Length: 113
Length: 113
Image 1: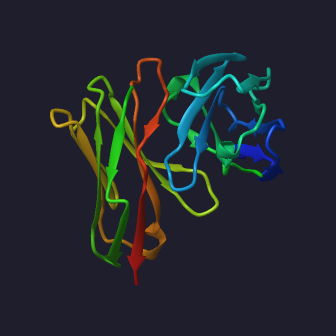
Image 2: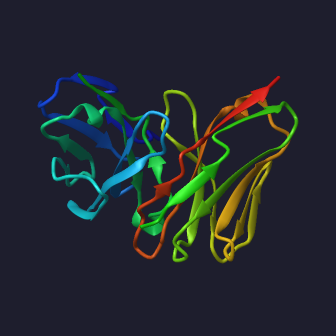
């Protein structure tokens, strides 16, 4: 049973560019959450998707947007990249029967130069 | 919003000894408290969790205690082993359809052989 898979594993971009990160949830899961983890810090909640809609959002600007597809996979898009966007981006999936039990992927390490 | 503080930031213990990590939270409405273990290059992995209607929970060598009055909870690892070396995160959430987790800043645990 595959867990949460994320792609790519590493990415290098320059300031002002746009980036798309992808996530496939664990089999049987229908909810996807995205977190940003800066170096040496705990993950910070970006937003959560369920039934293809953004259900909840953390304190992140509109430059951060997302999408969930009918197969429950998800994308995170970041526009107009800033140096401060450099971080590990984690996708976590869960299912409505136990939404609080998050299963995390290994993340995408984004470096903005 | 919720704020979670975690101590210590680093902890070294001799193999076989016990390790204790402590967290405090600010929002008295929080009712779900998971602990995650993050190994190098991997996403956080849920190791144990507790709800506010329970004061203590144990799973083999790992236990978590919760003091709702003082708004703090702790992770206890007994008979530590080298494979316990990792970064540990506490988190809190209000689990009434709100699955956003607020994480602590992490504790780097090193087990000395």
